[in-house]
Length: 305
Image (cartoon, rainbow, N blue to C red; front, side, top):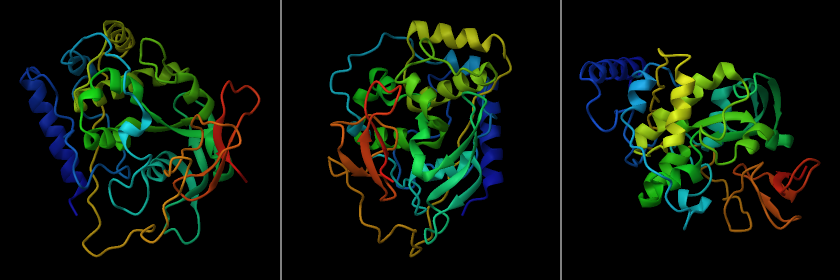
């Protein structure tokens, strides 16, 4: 397994070299966006040790949105794949990374998170996570999948879209209602309520779009630039890869049957659903029901417990 500190040191050195060359390339190298067998793991915390966010923003193409024609969540692969082959799906990997005091379901080799505390970066609140109320903490795609589609992903391979959807650089555990309010918004239409996190938030969006080659709209670039004026030294985060298990090493869910939803795939707690009353399972095999709670404008998958 590679030495994580050496990996980080290499990334930092590469970032410094890029800056010294004036970022003349179209895209700053923040990690390969080509799909790989190992993918990117979530068990290495991202560090804001990349180039200046303003510099990277300047390398992104500026275009109008493409048509939404053809967009569907399924175009980004099955929800929460185990891309790093550590036996845990990416949702649980991100919960394990972002929560503190987490506890795990017995028999899952510290894979299925059943409780913990989230210091929510979007709101600044402390939120208790319980598996039975999993939709209260959602995993946000910092660059929303639909936004990615209309800024370039429509032309990608399914493998690249699947890597994008499961890349820990683009994933944050967040307050469910706040994440739902964001929807598919970009920085021009939505920013975290907590102003203290906005510099980090837009820097992460810039990092993701640079890594995968998405463009920004004119309004989006202006909004990001406006935020970064208050933090000109803000740097973009870089993601660390985690090696796949050694040959012959088994993951916690090797023999677990695939969870099923209406379409034969696992469903995500908190995601929109229809029709009301439908039944499904999440990626851990726990039962979900499509239901509406007070304040909802649409039905969402929630724990059936």
